[in-house]
Every structure is written in structure tokens, then in C-alpha cells.
Length: 179
Image (cartoon, rainbow, N blue to C red):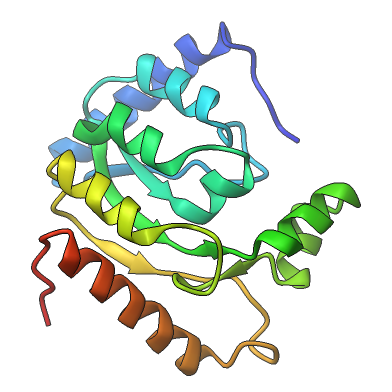
């Protein structure tokens, strides 16, 4: 796993902020995506990143990656709601997560084993997630996502299942779903 020290976050954050400000001046917002296999995976690392970057650095929350890393998607939303500018919604199959962690499989092997799925087919409470996003006033993109083997999970079937689940969860939280 890649990592940097908490002290290195200051330098990294300064450089990232400069880059984000440059992008913003060109009309392109930056969305930082904490992701497995990178230097920012855990809630602590996300908190360090946000503490060491300026407001031009937006945050993408990926419910699946946060949960896989042992984090709390709702907690991150509450702490960094003003910086959120993109949301990826994917679910976690809890039994597979437990198994791949016990066997110490690589992230790629965990994906192949089927740890991820679409919203509504796993352990994440997307009704609570949507309600938390509503609490912080989020109004941007929300993407249905799953990293899974199409031979095991037919993409159209699962995309529809995830869309229907998220539509219900976000509608219940008071969001308007645009066509």
C-alpha cells in the first residue's frame, strides 16, 4: 500500500491546492477520489487531506471504497459536506468483505471475488447515506457504480437495480431526480 506521513500531507496539500486553483480558473472543478491502493484510503487520511488543502479541492465520496477501507461514509459526509462535489454509490457484500480481509487478498482479488455490487445489493444503508447528503445540502452528481464481473452480475440488470434503489433512497431524502 502506498502511504505518506501526516507531515507530508502539508506539502502534498499545498501542491494539490495550487493545481485545483489552476483548474478552477479554467472552469474545471477538481474532485479528489479517495481510493483503495492510493495514499488516501482511510477516513483519517481523508481528514488529513481536507485539513491540508484549500476549498478549491473538492471531495468525491465513494461509499464502497470508504466502507472497504473500514471508514464511515456518513461521517465523512458530515465532516466534509461543504467540499463534496461528486458521489459514487456502490455497495459492499459484507460476507465477501470479511472473507477477503481474513484471507488478506489484494484489492484486485477482492474485486474479482465480488466484494462490490450496486446499491441495494449489499450492506450499506443508502437511505441513511442519502439523508446525510441532504443534511449537508449536497446537490451534485450521484453515480450508480459497481466494480464486478459482468459474467456474474449482468451489467444492465444490476445497473437498473442500483438506479431503482438509489432513486427510492434519494427521493425519500427529499432530492429531486432529474431525467
